[in-house]
Image 1 (cartoon, rainbow, N blue to C red):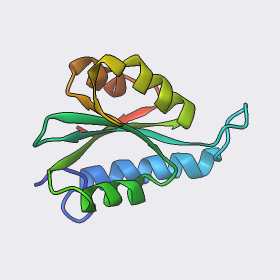
Image 2: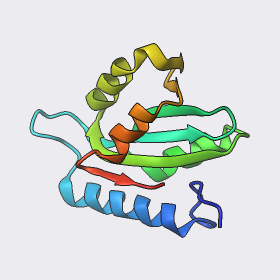
Image 3: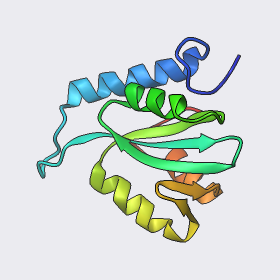
Image 4: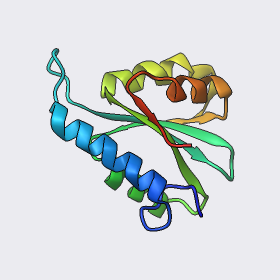
Length: 124
């Protein structure tokens, strides 16, 4: 079974996205400070060994867009309920590892952060 994000071929990834979407639906889309909330996610480009830290309101749609725009194998590693601000903080935290834009060199520190995030769902 393919373990990349693909709701047809990977029920594990699809279930995790369903769980996140349900959490989002049940918890609204704004936090106490009025910031729009949704998902901060971690993707891996398995061919180039790069990580992407991103933010989206619709995780399912965003992953489909990224996969359709990329010929490399893209794998969803983890996601958590968060804000655009959370995304920027994390991108700044690992700025020294930045490859280009929201893509970063593969680093276990980034993967560990997402895997152990208290609001996260680990996919891999």
